[in-house]
Image 1 (cartoon, rainbow, N blue to C red):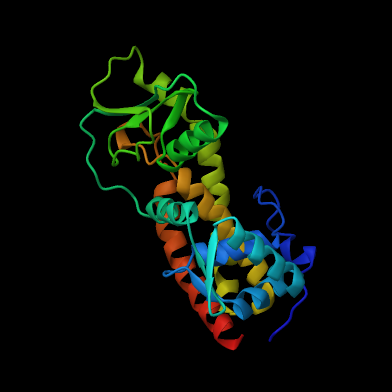
Image 2: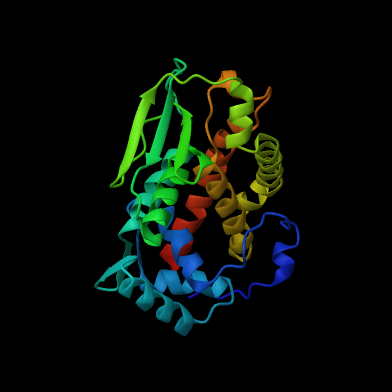
Length: 264
């Protein structure tokens, strides 16, 4: 097993990405969410966590807890994503693909109609709406342009698709999404991808924590980037450039991970 100690110096050039330091759980999730099928042997997950200076015992404990919580399954030492994490992977994959649907002016509206929803039901509703890239008008009302598929419909939720009447569409979009902040974030990620791309080609496993952090930041961003119709976007929306840049970055990253896992 190859061991490298991860130090904060490795991360000195990626401050501001708002990614918390990787725990054993987040290392496991990041690795499995990027794999198809999302399955890895225990030694590969332990070896990867060691790069982040996480002890094998800590990783084993986290794996056991995730299995107990229904987040993973295990069979013959192979751990696989399960439950709602499979839906998260589908949302993540969808975020990486730019929508190709034409927009005819219709909107998707989702309304939570239940009067006595539990906190778990409220959280599940919010999670489904965010994952489907709807914007929050009010806690029980979410909407977006209908240039994507309808979101999944939880119980006691009404989903409609059709025309709406609004005084100012641009004002509504600005209320649903902080476009200036999203654009600034996208530009930051493009800069980090571009700056680190050559380092990925070096296939230096000591840089895997940095690559993981950049990749996690981009995937998190693309999972919720609204993918609005061009008519509703500011000029030069950089997320359109970010997706192909990340596809190229991810291919090289995947090659490095496959080689690393083969050595474990």
